[in-house]
Length: 426
Image 1 (tube, one colour):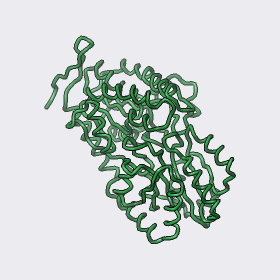
Image 2: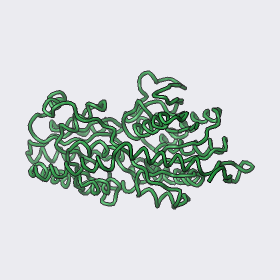
Image 3: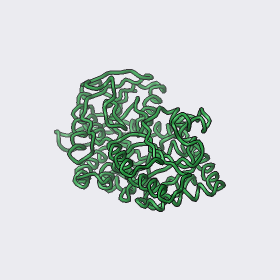
Image 4: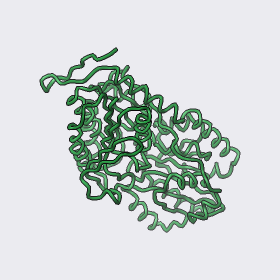
């Protein structure tokens, strides 16, 4: 079977949803399907096009049996409504070239790039092929909750585009149950929505914690609190900087904080930390997966942080790395958020109020003082990861999604206006 996938994010990116869609595409290829992925130039999470791709308009690669057709697109170094619109518009324009490829048997579009959902429906109309969508994030609600300038305007426009895309999809996969009611409000049929799972992509730690701490210049003794991942508006990491400041002011010399990763807010966070003169806060760049695994294992507490307004439209992918690491999680997130629901379901951490540095610090200190509780949370989180976040079960969900898309109906456009469905199978 010939399958066309639209995903702006793809390997060699190792953060966000790229590892999952890469794993899915390679799994489909290993199953004997002919897979083409229309991807962007690697740029996430540092929001800079990587060396070797910079300046390229197109690139064709074959990786583990998957043909990757990359297109140029604008990459904003700072987030705003206008920049996000340009990012999506150029992503869509670059992907239009896929309409000249051989007719696929099925099409999949992957969100968080809204342009990929729109490309999936556009390609379905062009080829008369069925399509499905996978929502790793819901852009419209996420934009409204992000704190980005002009986010409300982006949210309205994104909701219109999301509705247009989901109303034509044969199946809509969601990685969080909280996405379901919003997508139904946008016009998705309830029976078309299926739950998918992300899985653990991180390898086991390879180095003793003390060796890892020495290698990265972290204190061998004391309590290391680490946040790994994107440093954007949605994360609101000023809260962790403030937590480090409060800890230093309280003369709690046990605690040190690490912000690991990159993103469009990193420079502002570094300036904020420098202004407060915080020797107990370190910044580390994005690490390869093995080094990340070692750092997670070498930490005492793993942090999730979101702005108070971020609620049901974002499930941090970092949890699939945190929970199997055997370290307790402290999540400063809204109580009704998908992140809070996942941490609570796992039993692997505690949830505190977002935007409250004192609450975050108190939770960290309680775990530092109660080693037995910390070990209990860590053990529960690891058990949950083994049971729920296993790769084979997650990929089986994608197999089912693809089978349902293919067995549905072919998409066509009647006179370029109204959309219709034509049965091609049971």
